[in-house]
Image (tube, rainbow, N blue to C red; front, side, top):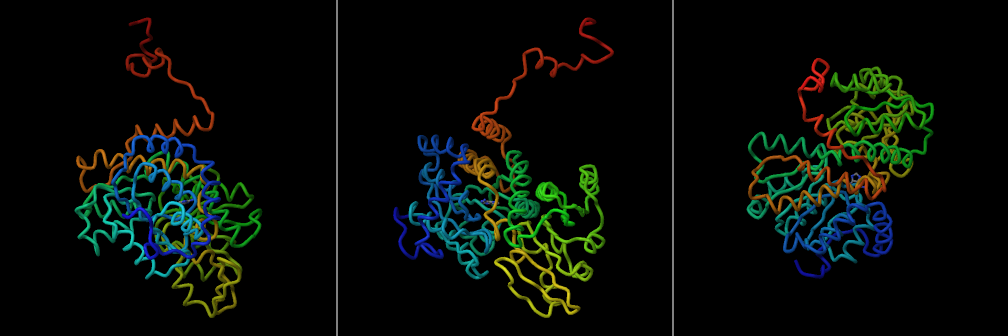
Length: 432
Ligand code: ADE
């Protein structure tokens, strides 16, 4: 890649937004101390020197900070969006203007542009891929498989992407190793729960400005993301109903104090509906048939398939944009249903995504996973790998220390006890 990005080597909304983007990027960076620590080491050691990396990520101020530290480590990065509605145009501009990065991402891009942008990012012939949803890997293995030989490995940010990758690996179709960053503890315990919880409520509130207190809020699913949404909706005073298909998760939701019932029953009583399951048609036509006038529907899962918008469109006599990121669907019987963020992930479409303090850990995992692949990729095969636990714990320790939180260590005696199987009730240590 040439040092300077030439006009034409990027496709963004407006380069004049760059300064605003730089300020927002710096603001986000204040809550990303783990990335700063990695940046210092990367700057010294240059682990990515000469490495071409193609990334399909949500182009946000947090992602920009990840790009900053990878560039400090010598990486040559091309970046495209991982969702047509999640790009922050000022951030895309800042990365082009101040980091000379080829960025291909425009908020509100069409599906055609989205695909062109994936292709443009891949035109750099990457050694590494960094995905959020697996669209880059899918394109590499289908339309661009001439590029596969150059690829050492990839990383995947999100639950949906990991599910797709595992399906692909099970069919023996994955040509290179991919590290499931999503499955790192320092990722999904925090990002999926606290990040999605806060940012989804933020998106819903920005899109609608409705009061949550006293509303009946129906959460589709009780995985890590849905748990976060349920927890924060409850915190704002909503009466939360959870729907599930997994008995264990349903039981957990009951014991966490939520009502659990089938969606058809929940559909009759809910004011606000939000799904984050990774599945499809969680809110389907037959649910919409029984929803109350004024019900609000949103999705916080990766793809825009959790609300059956086709069915809703067919049931509607008109669709009107009534606020930014809020569409009113008027049904034949006069009821109105409202869809936030066009059914795309509401936290990134209508708000700014997860706060930087959690993305600090998610993206530390991304950076360390990329480094690990460069060091160990040739010993790995076309499979989905967990993040090495040692790195995961290292990130937790760095985050704690950046937060000025100290913890205990086991004494020698405690350690010995934990490694001893003979000490129970029947035999005490005086018997030994
Ligand atoms: N996914 C969810 N929130 C995000 C953010 N702020 N930046 C990048 N990816 C995200």
